[in-house]
Every structure is written in C-alpha cells, then in structure tokens.
Length: 137
Image (cartoon, rainbow, N blue to C red; front, top):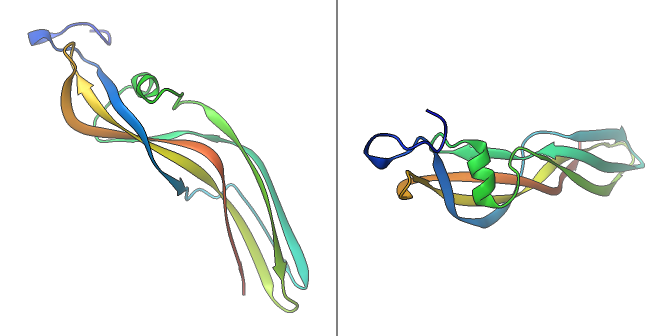
C-alpha cells in the first residue's frame, strides 16, 4: 500500500504533523570546527558551513510529512556562519570549538484520513547559527 492509500477501517498508512511551533534554541553536540594555540595570542575561529537539519520522533513519520507540517524542509542543509575571537594569556593553551545552533520545533502526529491524534510528537532541528565553546588550560 502506498502512503496516503486508505487502509482498513478508514485509516491510512501515513501520518501528518499539526500544531507545529517553535519551542527553543539549542546548541548541538556535533563539533563542526575547532582551533587551538598557545598564548599570548588571539584565536580567531571563522565558521561558514552547511549543516543538515535533524529530526527526533516518537512515531515513524515519513520525513516529507514532517517537512510539510513544519513548513520547512527537514531533509535540507542550511548555511551557518559566525566568527569569534578569544584572547589566550601568555603561558596558557587556548581552545575554541564551534557547534551548530538549532531552532527547535515541535509538532503533533495525526494518523488516518480523519486526522486522529496519536498522542505522539516529533521535533525538528533547523540549523540557524553557531555556538562557541572556548577555554584555556
């Protein structure tokens, strides 16, 4: 049966996403760039990368339906760009790391032709910027 084809008891084998809304911003955990060096120096980290959107879900929803419900493509990559400068004191070792910054969206999964709520949610993470982590040792 293909997606959207009515199945037994008037249900279908696909889900739709409704009530999608922005809930927060969050720094990702996947390192996208790093620099380090010994002071006295200024570390400069310029980031200009493409980062893929990601999805987390409590139910098996096809990504095209998540994209439709969110109003943006969850299968695309998005450009993120930012720069930071970090002063490293003499005699210290400094490190600067860059991670993706995401806008987090949440939506409710509905099933069947009648759009019955499942009580399950999906979350989509759209890359919108860069988070920096910097320290000396």
